[in-house]
Amino acid sequence: MPDAPEFLDEPFFPEGMSQPDPDDPIAKGFWDAAKEGRLVVQACDDCGAVQYPPELNCHQCYGFEMGWRTVSGRGHVWSWVEVEHPATPALQDFGAYTVALVELDDLPETKLLGNVIDAPPGGPSIGQAVRVVFERTAEDLVQPRWRLAEG
Ligand SMILES: [Zn+2]
Image (cartoon, rainbow, N blue to C red; front, side, top):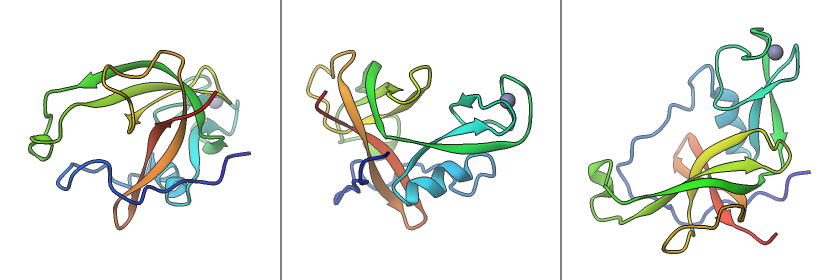
């Protein structure tokens, strides 16, 4: 069972960041779940394979009946990078931030890319536990982020 969702009170990134399209037909289920504080990964209705990021069809059986599986939102840092160069003007004065590949505890073969909002200088440790948190970045958009966790 997922933990009770945590929504950030304050935005992590500054105003002016580019935003994903929450109505993108392939990823809409992901964004709809995030609005409810649920982390989901795409799962094939035919063969059960899970995949991230969402795609038009299944990479295992090539079927087009794709659904969503809710995961606990707990994972471990599989790899990470500290981004120092401001990729957009909005990040000009923001400073370095950490992007991690997080291996999900429920689906160890599935790794999600995201920001670790409280990574220490020098980055998190490989294998460090994280849990998902949700940040509303627009009226109709909530984005999952990661926070360091126990375990
Ligand atoms: Zn499939």
